Image (cartoon, rainbow, N blue to C red; front, side):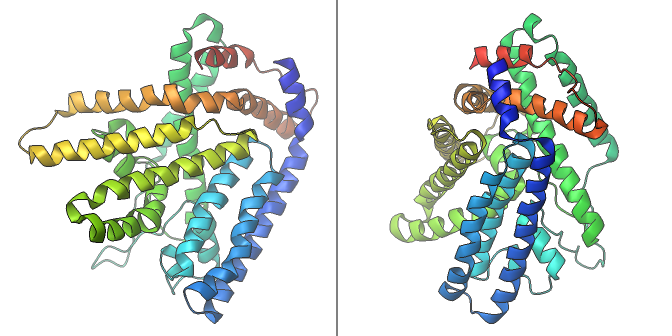
Length: 369
């Protein structure tokens, strides 16, 4: 563990990482400004796509300048997935960037951040408020603080329980991180923004989890770029009744490949394809679930008190089996806690770094993998 930690610290310093982070995002702002003005000069389709290709390639390369789990991981998700998919849609004058009323700051923010401006309610000049209460986020922040304390006793707690806590920790960190981004965009753009998560722990089915509750910006990005085009082609080939099958499987396959790419950026190691199998399994099960619902024709269904535990149990169980091992192999847990220590030391401006008891939690999680 000490050797891994020494190698980790050799990769970057907090000051250097922040400088690189600023440089990367300055490049993003310049690139999206170029795309905004270029789109006004070129027609949609191939000419605009060719003009955007250098920016898309740049967005694929920029994350290699960052090493941290938090700044680097966030940048990978925002640029490699969201921004590039939005630019691909915009090349054909589709997606959120095709709104001609967007100002340049709005174009840049929507182009590279996981946000979407709320549509105005019909008959009302104000946008519908979608953000959650401060109490909601305060409770989740307190839970994260509690989890950090639990990790100090990781050697006294069963490793499966530690993995469950770690799973909840990642979800809460994602939600809070995206909430901060949304709040900043709300303050600078003066518009309400749609939430990225809709209480996924209340899901009653895989369709409910993936389509309506988990990472909604990704869902809204994959639907017009993958699901709808494949659905249209498949409807002509196999008929509308069966078209949903290849559309769903293709969407999960693309999501799997994007997750493999994100993990490659985080760990810089060759993929093991477990994550791909995770998403293909969920895609196949979602297709089967929809088939059962059609056969039942609404005559029967599981009550929420049964459906929710089954759904969450399947998601978490398959996550432990196929998703989290790759996350732990790239030492995401160890690196995350080391970054907390580095950030704390950077803010205090003192050395040596304060010691965080992260070895127990990371070793317990590694045992589970």
